[in-house]
Length: 240
Image 1 (cartoon, rainbow, N blue to C red):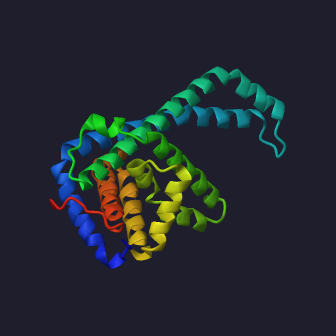
Image 2: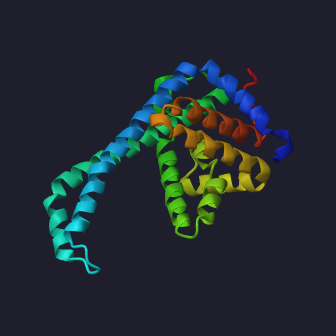
């Protein structure tokens, strides 16, 4: 079935997502709290590394020419603690991916009328495909930032459905990116509105110690999941 932006309205997606969240509020709150805690963990793990980096750069001198030997000696002295910090950061990043996958999987389950099981959202299939897809999007986004920002925005716009393709169908990373880009190209107006809503939701989620995450992270996932199903001609559970 061909996609038609006129068949999917952002207002309908928002209305459906609001009711879906209310009907599954406890599960979504629990999933979002896990994400929030892990995000704090990432920040905590990054702190010592940033402090060590700054201190070692200062140890190399404040003149225009840095003492590379002094910098190397400083890092070598702290190598044990740095490796521990990097290991902690890696664990938190993987766990955060897992938790975020749980929220998206929960949203996909709700579109099908399935009950959200807290454990099911974490232990469901295709996490590897999701994690690799998310990492690939992060890499291309960072690369886009070095190309005067606009390419980074295009990356997020074109690939916003890729994590959903990975979790829902188990597509490989490049297949997920290609499928998402194709969906967006055929539905530009809706895709732009979805990106603006998701960006606002994630921005608000970062305020007040991340507490708004429990509301806005699931809403962003639900709205995108609704659009993901609808513009492909798939049925969405009409309980709303």
